[in-house]
Amino acid sequence: MDARVFTEEQEALVLKSWEAMKKNSGELGVKFFNKILEIAPAAKQLFSFLKDSNVPLEENPKLKPHAMAVFVMTCDSAAQLRKAGKVTVRESNLKKLGATHFKAGVAAEHFEVTKLALLETIKEAVPEMWSPEMKNAWEEAHDQLADAIISEMKPSS
Ligand code: HEM
Image 1: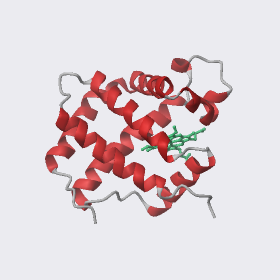
Image 2: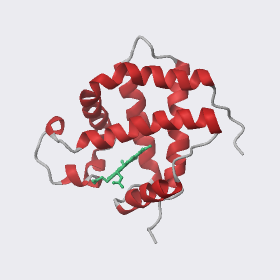
Image 3: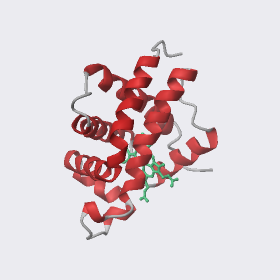
């Protein structure tokens, strides 16, 4: 088992920054996607709602749910890691998430892109709170969640 421990302080860093930014979740979602596409323009082809869309990113109504899923599930992951020492997303949900991403053509490397975009977006949203400890806490919560999803990225049976 992983010897890394996720502390109460780390959970608090994730949750307090999320509290501070979530009121601007619309703007946050657009920034997050813009960063993903800056780092990896080809990622646009993966998202059914972006691929054939001529609507500017900030007007695309479908973008926010995915962005928020990444933020909220990473926060949940922080709470789970502190309580249980591991990601405890329900098995059936994890299988579905894995299958959806597999079917959409998402690869493990893409999670590195969304992680960078996530960290940059948070840093710019709460510059007064940002610290190496806060970065580390979000990164850890993200990585453990991403690993759990990646391990289920296979065809659904
Ligand atoms: C769909 C969460 C990372 C691309 C979804 C859905 C959720 C989700 C909840 C909807 C699932 C469903 O309808 O069954 C997450 C979380 C992530 C993550 C929590 C990271 C921790 C990524 C990455 C990519 C990606 C790295 C690729 C760059 C997609 C695509 C879909 C999707 C293409 C299908 C959306 C569509 O075309 O309608 N994701 N995701 N996701 N995700 Fe992610």
